[in-house]
Image (cartoon, rainbow, N blue to C red):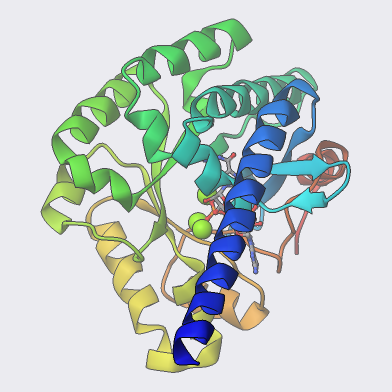
Amino acid sequence: LAKERGKNNYQFYSSKLAELTSRKLDLEKWLRKSMEKNELTLNYQPQIDLETNKIIGVEALIRWHHPENGIISPADFIPLAEETGLIVPMGKWILKEACTQNKRWQELGFDPIPIAVNISVRQIQEDNFVESVLQILEEVGLNPRYLELEITESIMQDIERSTIVLNQLKEIGVQISIDDFGTGYSSLSYLKHLPIDSLKIDKSFVDDIINHSNKGEMVKTIIDMGHNLNFNVIAEGIEKEEQVIFLKQYACNVGQGYFYSRPLPVEQLEELLLKNRNEKAFH
Ligand code: C2E
Ligand code: MG
Ligand code: MG
Ligand code: MG
């Protein structure tokens, strides 16, 4: 009897596995086509100077509008795009789109601000990554200082190569920030020697401020450490005023989160930029 059941279980699991595998293939197929069919768009989330309440940057975040499945979260398809290598052409498209948009805002007369673009470690590993960034900046005619590349601590895994690539990027003149800081493995001594402009404190630590778990100690520590190393410190995932008050108290420079604004389609972000030019987008 046990044997029977075992066999059935095995069949159950193997068909489940087959289903999952075929869905993954479906997803990959859809993802490939999504680029040709213009189903990918970027949303933009403002970054706010906590002292002046002015928008001093925006982060580009990809959205996939699938005709049948609606909006699919990047958390669901970026890992697959990385696994299949599709992230490389997709990442180029994202960079070009984000730079083009930022250039357009400058031409519309908005105060020039950097646009932050998320870069997968898989892209950095490509031999011609630096050249492709340079080429895009030239094609678009965007001053490199208005592009900020967000990378994660996973670059530390190949510190030798990453150091070379980041230094080359710095030579071009783009800005570099470490995203989701605190969740990965960073050696402080490496961090100190890398040409980094900003640390983005991961949302989980910013959440701790209101959960009162360890009283936001990690946040304080990261802010202090960032400032000691001459980095700009950005808090991500701010949802409550209480967090803003805490962050300002510890002199965090920049904030980003639903408290200020969700990631928005271009037109809505432009309304905020317009307010930002005339007065303040946030009070
Ligand atoms: P991330 O770069 O750390 O982006 C921040 C994520 O937190 C975004 O989710 C954003 O919408 C969300 N967020 C911002 N403020 C708040 C808040 O106050 N509360 C909450 N609950 N969430 C907030 P999103 O857009 O779903 O992106 C998820 C992740 O997918 C990103 O994390 C990034 O790692 C990746 N991703 C997104 N766009 C791209 C892209 O263009 N290229 C690459 N390589 N990865 C991307
Ligand atoms: Mg990011
Ligand atoms: Mg992040
Ligand atoms: Mg994240």
